[in-house]
Length: 426
Image (tube, rainbow, N blue to C red; front, side, top):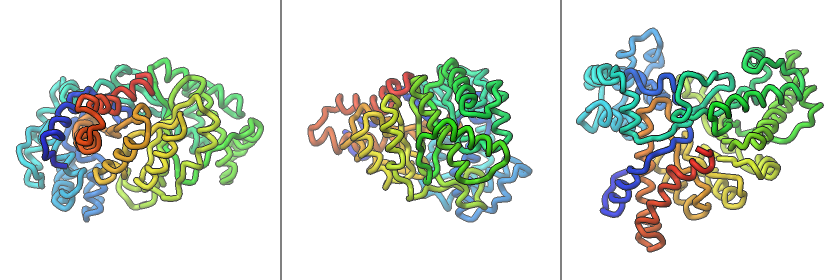
């Protein structure tokens, strides 16, 4: 999105001076920065877009040398150079690899690979990327049995991801992981609560600031009586595959997580509406899509039952955004949270952000998160959002005289930093 007028340009420049807090990512803190161009082009956006545009999936095989995988994707980049995801890659190449052009194709493969190999091998590469990005804290996505050792939890903030506990407790390997992480064989409701409470204790002691889960479109949480949950767990342990048993167990565990969020004073991030493995022949991480059947009315009982718990909500579609805006407008404990996945393109971000700013208290909006797997992606993704935010602030707030430029920048600081600090205690 080009910046064409002085006011918008000046606001964008000042917004870029705000040190970021990134409240959701998939960064591995033990390998946060990229080691090669393959780490960049291996991001699922490029593999799935190139595959969609005609690339043979065999080109992504682990048996293929990394440079050849990169070349195969770059050969298809001209077919996707209209996409915002391609613009992210060009910006990474410019900001971090010294690339001078504005279009990337297969003819640049060797030069970009060589530059990445040379620059990313520097011992302080991670610190260079963090400094250029100007990000103070990055929230992680940690499996419940992650040891949370060997990294700076003030910079890389742990977050307890709970999908497996809710939806995969029927799998023996998940129950075994829970036992190894807690020392508790959870065969009834009381033992399960004790085990999950141990997870919360360990995460909170390691500076965790949130619990999180991604949720399918047909999930509608409700409380489960302790005896009913114990019976469901017994049937699962016995090998039952009955859908009603699995649903009872999922509801029971989910409600327990909300209770523990209340007890440990953690926000509960809900990422709502993803339907897994829709495209079963898709590339890795390129199989999941949104589903219009989702409604936040499915979570109304939860929001009413836990007024002390803050629920930062992410939705996958712009259609769902209007519903999220209305729930955040009414419920004190519902917060708008970023622009997730298929909504994370400018044509959706702009109207969604505009609607939130016009209707939701400014203290209840977490403007953006990177969802990044490698540090290098934080900069171009946030720049995309900051350009949109600068335009909205200029057009909707400063020019009509609602805010001064200083007030507009104060709002930007809330969206990019201060609300996350307060809501997550970061």
